[in-house]
Image 1 (cartoon, rainbow, N blue to C red):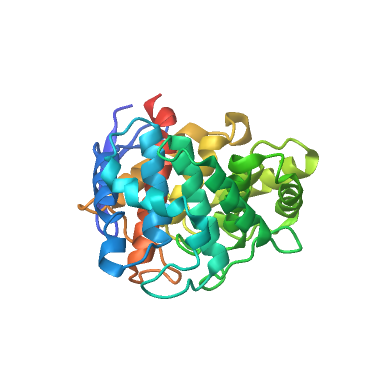
Image 2 (image 1 turned 30 degrees about the horizontal axis):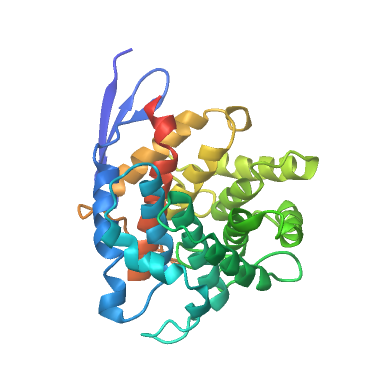
Length: 329
């Protein structure tokens, strides 16, 4: 059967979709990653000179995307990340950030900076594993008694820069594992138990649960992961991408989180995984702005926030990098 081209306008961008008898395929525009890399390479080093402080959005989420790109061989200039790396290697100074004053949520800030430092070490841009261990010690000290990391959120669901407790817990565990798995066995065990039991109320929660339990095969973990993937499968928007809840319009951040989760799960866990990833990538390509960024995912939607825009763009680029291999097949 010949393909039928369907053209429609999204929020800011023209979508081109091709229907055939087998599936709905979406053409992904080339150059998406390159534009995002160029945008973040400009923005990440700008914040500190202009605002006299380091930030969780520029030097946390956005920098992590650049470290991950560098690990994959992208030519990220030393000057782009040099000052960020120097800052991250001094976790003892994180609470004395300068500029705008103390962090509104220091627990969240430590999680974000530690995650960025873990990627800096993983990419080879930082050689200071001792700094990563000291950072992880700080993060471990913030764990709640139930095993989670509690952070402030906007409303009832996390956002790119505020995370929410499920994503915060998964990101904290990621840093502890990267620093020293044996040293942090006890807090990691507590967190794993919490992740197996926490209610999965949103697409963000579902994606974070999949990421947090992806390597666990005990019955409780498998059942929790199955619940999360079921919600993800039912929540895909009709035109591709994911929003925060079932039947919600797609948003760049929620789509990025789902792509990161699907990149790590197995085909047998999520039938049609490769096709879902390609549709999600195509959605991100379609809504990317001309400057290489993505519009900020805010709660409630359609707000304006530079912090959320930088974090949204960082998460979107991480998702594209993580799903390169699937998209190339």
